[in-house]
Amino acid sequence: MTQPGFNAAYLHPLFADVESLRGEGAYRQLPAPQPSSSLATDDAPLGSYSASTLIRNSYSAGVAHADALRRLILAGEVDPQSPWTLMRGALENLATAVWLLGGNGRTERRRRTLALWREDMRNRAQHEEDTDHVPGPSGKTGRERRQDITNLAISLGIPATSLAKPEAGKIIGEAAHDVGLRAREVTAVWRAASGFAHGRYWPSLRASTPVDAIQTGPENFMMALVIDETQHRPLAQHTHALLQHLHTRYAARATVH
Image 1: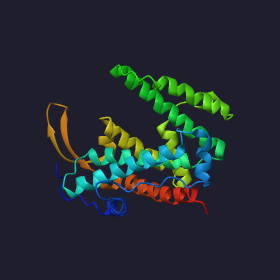
Image 2 (image 1 turned 90 degrees about the vertical axis):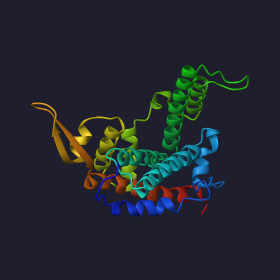
Image 3 (image 1 turned 45 degrees about the horizontal axis):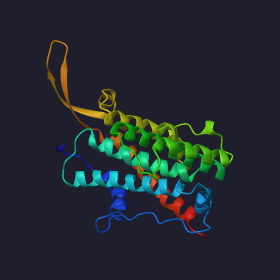
Image 4 (image 1 turned 135 degrees about the vertical axis):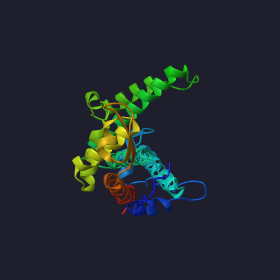
């Protein structure tokens, strides 16, 4: 679906930054943290469950989501849902990376990292069970790795009770605070974007623009909706702010000065 008159100017700053990260068949990755950097010190006792691995993966996924929207708009294909769902993916990913880089002290950063790894392994275990996958003789199941993470946390003085599943809304709110954004404003547009992603009804009424309506019954109407640029703009701006902060913060934490 092509939306007539769609003005993508508000997306250009974000898209320019994302396009600059494109290379030959891949996006430019965040570099591994330098030895003796603050981030490498965070990672030292975590082994394969490092913060930098999660941060770099989240960053790459966020960039890819934003670039997918850029390419969709370049193709002239703008529908009422996709700009919300793709930007939601970008915001969630970038906020997660910012959240992992933040935290009040090294213990808290490690707790966040291990909590997210523990949830990652819970999801892995669910997939293994759904597919009847059994690791090789030297491998471990997601459940076993999840227990390893719990044991590692305890050995570092991090209570197992503090490793509950990190909630997306809390991650986004705390990341927004780190960036200097109003947390409630960021979570509000994220909730609308999530509503579109899950096919909910309410976001269409709150964050879309009706352009036509057809009566289908005595009291029923079918509405034609297009994306409301004024509602989508803050989502793009917040996502761009997270990306810029992430570049700056990662460089500071992953480099030896």
